[in-house]
Length: 167
Image 1 (cartoon, helix red, strand yellow):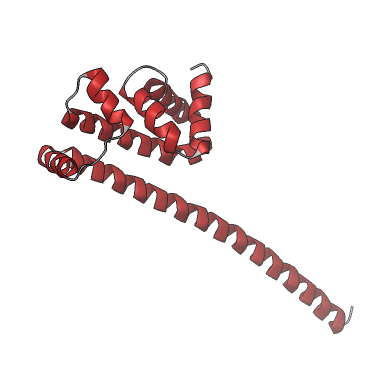
Image 2 (cartoon, helix red, strand yellow; image 1 turned 90 degrees about the vertical axis):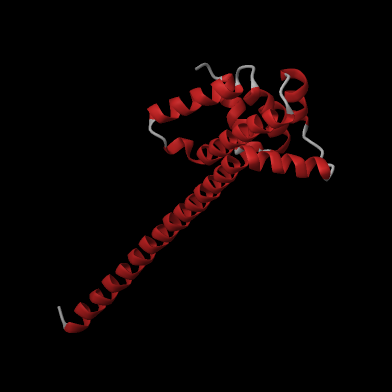
């Protein structure tokens, strides 16, 4: 074997190494992009829950409610139902609403990654979904009157699928 043949083999091996490296980098970029999206979604959800927690505080809630009333805000059907059917004050209904929205925000954070959960975690999550949205109560009313009309269809399909499967 002469040096030209060895050089040609080296060039072929070098080309293969470049393609393998590029393939590896493509996989890493895809993984990094998915992790960035997950982190952004988690940060958004945490910020949303924090804002809802702040709004549940008595003085903040009272001030927001007072401003809404003075400015003629229309409350969603869900709040009206809580006031009329459950006998809550508007302030109490808003507190319940904030808890339902916080739970829904958490649920939306988990749904895209539910397949990655350990089996025990997934079963626990699905049982909580059944408990919240599968039986009468404030969360079910929130789901039926607000979420179903405004959430992404994939989220609705997932929740409806969990509710139809036996727990």
